[in-house]
Structure formats: structure tokens, C-alpha cells
Length: 312
Length: 95
Ligand SMILES: Cc1ncc(C[n+]2csc(CCOP(=O)(O)OP(=O)(O)O)c2C)c(N)n1
Ligand code: SF4
Ligand code: SF4
Image (cartoon, rainbow over all chains, first blue to last red; front, side):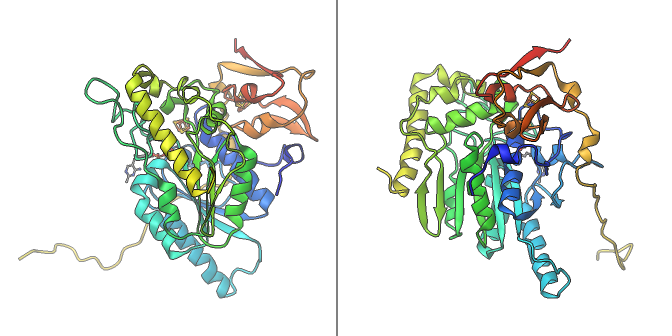
């Protein structure tokens, strides 16, 4: 379903203002695009939100920024919580206690700490059991809400508070965990990576993830202002640079087949365009040897997904 | 042997809290701003890219027309100004 921005602009927000996300936060932009996808796809959503920036800032008691039914339980169990909601819904439907026939998708959303680390077994269980859920990992590449600690999604050599770039270690010394591959390994029907600048690609993919029956998975790169230590108005332009430099390949996986998204660049730009304005990479940029290793890591991931998609 | 000083007969689970949807509107975030976005209507082509990207839903739109900003909530992040393809939005310091 193609989106005509002029037609939908001004539509009522399902995630309303007054929330306390940082000024210019990439996650808040993502959530706007999520509700546009749900409204234009005609699919209602129920959301379970893992602890993290999005949850904390949108539910400062007794307020809520959500106009969707929304549930928070804990940091590590949003997929388990949404599984229970989904089962309860279908049980009540079977008993005739829920009568309407609207299309519903049960959505769990969490940051990379929640998704890649602490909630991974909960996520694996929910995907394996085959619930009618969409799991969204909004990946800002560290535990931001508690002060920028490294997660298994943090990129190589990034400066974080628990793996600082200094004399002893050059920031994080491990590469990113490939959560997309882990999700796909569960044999789910649909998975995709998205980036907030490429809104048309993003909305189309989320519409699909909401419509396909069974467990689906979205991995979104969502820049974080203080955590990436970057200029406040740059979340969207950095998400763009991430795709254009090959840092963040856009792919889909549908019923066993990988697909290379048309929003990927024809020719890659130098990785420095993604790194330069982020102070978490300031020291890396001054170290040519490590920068070369960083580039190799980015390219090998990019080539890996190109190959899976059958693109030369 | 272990001594039990109190037997638990029954217990209730705390039902938790709930909040009404959309009530964060109570919290006006406009005071966060140190720069304010200003629209040059002559340059604006009503493409709605700013509306799409404003993290705080503070672009005012009516009948396909970009009308300006909701300064009660706009945090002054300058995203709208940066994504505008015609450079119709400038950021000016708050006084
Ligand atoms: C079991 C448990 N451990 C630790 C915390 C503290 N805590 C709250 S939010 C958070 C970080 C969340 O990081 P992430 O999932 O990456 O989301 P982000 O804050 O980056 O949006 C932590 C460690 C918690 N709430 N529960
Ligand atoms: S810390 Fe980062 S992810 Fe959290 S609200 Fe701020 S910009 Fe968004
Ligand atoms: S400056 Fe930021 S918060 Fe204010 S209208 Fe523009 S995008 Fe929205």
C-alpha cells in the first residue's frame, strides 16, 4: 500500500505529544511511522512495551502518551506478556465474549537491551510458539535509558560508559550480534530491517509485518541523541547515512526467501559520512588501523546479506 | 527444625496501575526549547515531510496545508528544519 503523505498528514496521532523522549529522538520518529503503518494498513494493534526509553518516557504515571491499548510489565518479558494477551484475546473470541471482527496484531516493542540481551529467551519463546505477534526491536545500539551502557547490539569500537574507548580497551571489542539472523532461524514467516529516513520502505514493511499471520519481526535503526553523542537535529539524516554507507542494509525475509530492498544504495558512500558527527566514534576516527577493521566488519555484514538475497 | 511463624492462607496480587490513553497532553514540553522553528510560507510546498518526522507531533496541518508549529509542545529539536527539502523552516534562538 503506497502512502500519499499529503493525504494522511494531520491524521490523529496514536502516540501523542507531551511524552518525555529527548528532543529529536529517533525512536519517537519511528513510533510515528509505526502508527501511520497500522492506521493505513487497517490493522489495530495492542502493544506490550519493554522497559527502556520509550516505555519510561511515554508512561509517566498517571499519564500515558498512547492511544493504543498498551501494557508494560518488565524489562525482560514483553514478548511473554504479549503472548499472554494474544492467547487471552483468542480464548475470549472462541467463547463468544469478543464479537467484533476487526483485524488485530499483537505487538511487542523493546530497545536493543531488551531485545538482544535480557529479553532474548522471552523473544525466542514467543517466536517459536507461533503467536500472532509482531516483535519490534528499536535498536539505538546501547542501554540508553540508564546511561549509555554497551549491549550486544553496540557496534565495534563504539565508546560507551561500560566499555569506554581509552588506553586499556578501544571501546567495545566485540562485533554486533546478528539478531535478524536469530529471529529468522525460528522459521517465522516475515522479518525485515528498516531505517527511519526511508519512511516509505519502512511503512510498507511494517504494514506487511502487521498483516502476515503468525510471528513477524522488525529490526529498526533508531539514532539516539545523547547515546550516539550527536547533534540534536540529526537523527533522520544519520539514519539515511547508515543506509547509504552500507552500515545498515535494508532486507526482507519472507517465507524462506531473502529480498534486497530497493531503497539500498546503488553505490556505497564512505563510512565516515555515518561516523563523523557521532562523538561515540570520535576516538575511532583518529585510529586508522581500527577504522580499517571497523570498515571490514561493515562490509562483511553488507556482503553477507547481499549474498543471502542473491544480489551480485 | 525450621519454625514457621505465620502461615499464609491467601494473598491478593496488587492489580497494578493504569492510565487513560493520550493524557500526556497534560505535560506541555514547549519549555524545553532554546531554539524555535519559524516557517517561511513562500518557500513551503506542503510536502508534509516535516509533519512525518516531528517526534513531538508539533507540526500543525489542516486540509493539506502546513500552518505552523504547536509551540506548547515543540521541543525545538530542529529535525523539521533539517528534513525540509526547500529549507522553508529556520531555527531562531528563543529570547
Ligand atoms: C531486570 C531489570 N534490570 C535492569 C533494569 C534497569 N533498566 C531500565 S531501562 C534499562 C535499559 C534499557 O535499554 P534498552 O532496552 O536498550 O532500551 P533504551 O533505553 O535504549 O531505549 C535498564 C538497564 C530493569 N528495569 N529491569
Ligand atoms: S536517550 Fe536516546 S533513545 Fe532515549 S529518549 Fe533520548 S534520544 Fe531517545
Ligand atoms: S523543532 Fe522539532 S519538535 Fe519542534 S516542530 Fe520541529 S521537529 Fe517538531
